[in-house]
Length: 96
Image 1 (cartoon, rainbow, N blue to C red):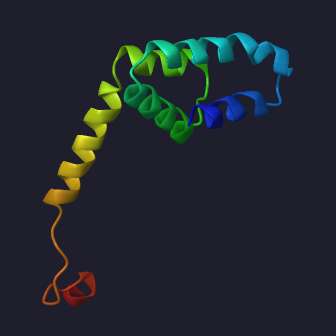
Image 2 (cartoon, one colour; image 1 turned 180 degrees about the horizontal axis):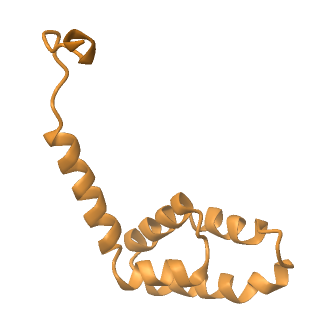
């Protein structure tokens, strides 16, 4: 996953690739200092949101991805509380 983040980082065309070397060094340092599961989750989130840069990944690692995990829990709760589909439920067209 880290390779994908670095590819995304260097594929940005608005600046020369040399500009991104420091960010890449920071990301690789985070990979060495962080728990592998947490780092992979942070990389997955950064790719999902299209923000493959050091500050974004560093903030995710520092917060242990809490904001993302809380959002996932809310989404799961909303899906669980949604009404199930049923054959006897009439749609809006039945009330016209």
